[in-house]
Length: 325
Image 1 (cartoon, helix red, strand yellow):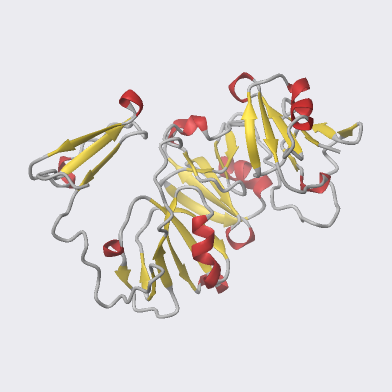
Image 2 (cartoon, helix red, strand yellow):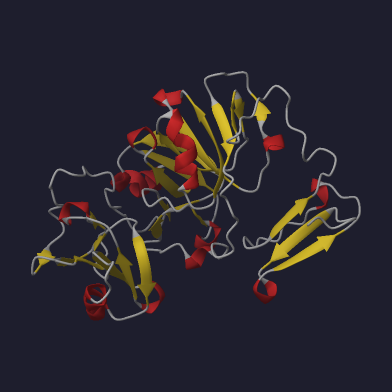
């Protein structure tokens, strides 16, 4: 329900989540940067908020040809145009998307609250853009440290850093961190599956708290330590070829150190590593598990059919992964 005379607002985690409604004429130059990534602020444009470009012909499913949304990409993936909306709806925090013919079909997942009025006409009738009606902003992801599971060496799956782009190069994920170390000015990085594997070099000083959660477990982000080389896991290893990573030494046939299974999280619990496998056995839907040092020791129960060939080598021998066999 709209509040009369409200012209702008801010939201913080105070008291579990507080929205402060404000009044008066303001613009973007009045916004104060706080450095607190858990805070949100915005300006209500009552006159233009519902007016979309008349050249964009929206259909009943809230997508259209020849349009795009500016910036705010979570990540991009090479897929068919018909699958782009569904991919957005399955991606945490994805609220809108666009697709174009670049690289035979690129879908850009985007975050943030938008309406059709935020779309711009690009004249390219092969491209599409759309809004995901199923999107509900999540306050559970506000504190990135609660959802980004940092590994030894200051890197993590499923995360990204905004802006500060320096350069990018197509290479395997395992080489991304050390490539960044060798590029002058590179301080942090993101690796994605774009173009079969792209390392995005970034500049300027950042902390782990500057990273945001993407929900895409096939992404890696990290901060470079110039004094310590870092070999990241090769997460684009062949799947479905019954080939296990030789660096993973399986114990008793069903568990190993320094490995992980990507995605398919069922639940997690702070327990000892030796208790994690038993917890999976006693949980009906659990088929495999991972234990890490996160929060003093966290057991991640996972679901779905997997094999040893799906395990990813992490190089972190404080982690354990295993199968329920």
